[in-house]
Image (cartoon, rainbow, N blue to C red; front, side):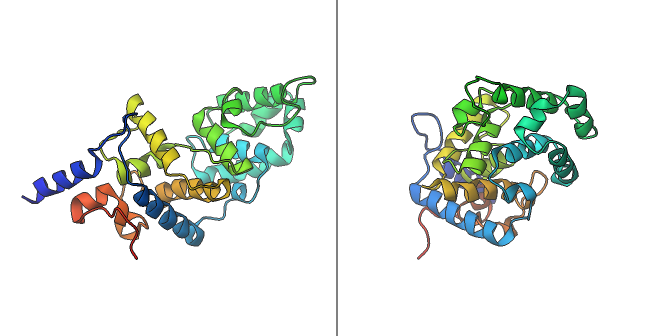
Length: 255
């Protein structure tokens, strides 16, 4: 009986669909989710160096280093790399061997090669970029090594654009909260998670900076791959996965 009730609650929370295939979520639920998430982040965010800058180059370096690499490993490499190559121009002027040496030990060396290639493309005399990384996600995606997530991250974190981003942590949080039936490794489901990410954004780019950082932080610290720390989660009141076990999902903020 209890298992059947949990399954029914899970289905009821996510069965409605929009024309684009994404789950139909009440706008009030998105607002509650966002406000609680951002309030939690302001109290609990880790002090990470790339969160103290709006420099597009420094943010790009951090995002590429953080791909498939733990934060604790990236911290030392991040500072050393930027001491050696403090700007996009300095990186573009370096030889490939010098760039590779500064990346040595971090792994996934295609990231370093793409970053070096990107720096030369952006700083090329007479080129379309004028030595500056573009601000819009679509333009960023045209550069070597920049996919949809990295483009959204640079646009959001450097330029405070109202841009969505979905990495592993974000996909896990969004699917558990809004659509437990979605699996990020399925292409169609990942597309729907991008739609949810876009719809969950606050109205301004400045608030989006906090929102996107908070999504990733929640997935890294609380709603992890191994453990769902629901007792510590600030958004459990609107979470479909949590509701399937303990109670109904809120559709409106509490007074």
